Image 1: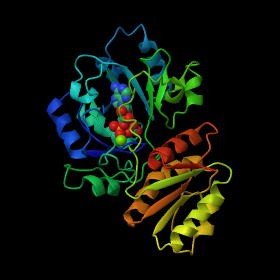
Image 2 (image 1 turned 90 degrees about the horizontal axis):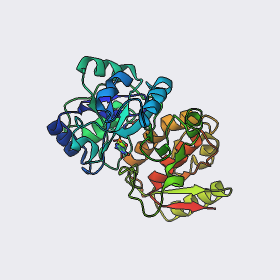
Image 3 (image 1 turned 180 degrees about the horizontal axis):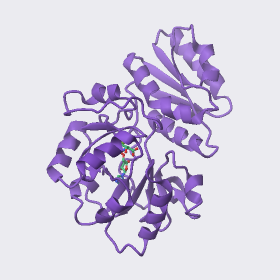
Image 4 (image 1 turned 45 degrees about the vertical axis):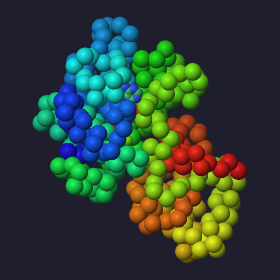
Length: 323
Ligand code: TXA
Ligand code: MG
């Protein structure tokens, strides 16, 4: 069943039931090479899924991180115990663990009394669902049920932190930011800095098209991005194309009344609000059958700007214009 978490809706199955996990991959049309996050109530329940002596290595860190950030939007990649089926970890010797904060997710975990493997409840390569309606849009008829908890608060997926690398490495930025993690882990780094050309891709879910909408999205970054964006939108409209723009409120007005579909992310100063609205806005643009979507980039100034930038760039799948 699908259920709300504070980040996005998840599609959950018994994490230790390999057959259930295979059905989950089929429902999402997700490649079996992309491992799942196992959801637990807290550190005590994570214990059984961890694969090493608790006093050494990553485990002291797991306990300290869990004490500070769980329940919450932080996923920890740790060595796995042999209980965890290969289907969950895509054959890796690590497992990703997270204790969600949403009261419905917690009530479900308490009632089920099992670890719950749950990816975001979207079809593969669609934006993650932030409302029950989004889940049904993608998975209606393919899953048994969705618990409707309204809109999720955070709106983007959890931070994925790999504790098995030499230095703790952020594989996916999220609402638990690098600055917050740095207070406990002074040597924390991001995957961008960590990746060496000869290393295998650390997060198989880091496929660049992971979050893309159906219509191609082009992202404009840099100091002249707004002007360039306005220019290309005008040209595309003149050519008779149906276009959509994804911009903060400050820039929404100039596009309104031009026959352009405008998705307004709210004030640029409200980063949390922009994150909450992002995926819903992408889906809304997508459902209007557009020829193209143009979006305004976000500069990485730390905190949530890094997360917004990451998700917009993934949605653009390489179509990024720097001006
Ligand atoms: O906020 C979230 O994390 C949501 C909610 C439902 O909890 N879940 C979510 O799951 O976003 P999913 O499957 O869409 O993304 C999980 C990410 C993928 O990028 C996957 O590759 C990575 O976590 N991951 C899972 N296990 C891993 C492992 N053992 N090593 C490295 N990356 C892993
Ligand atoms: Mg996902």
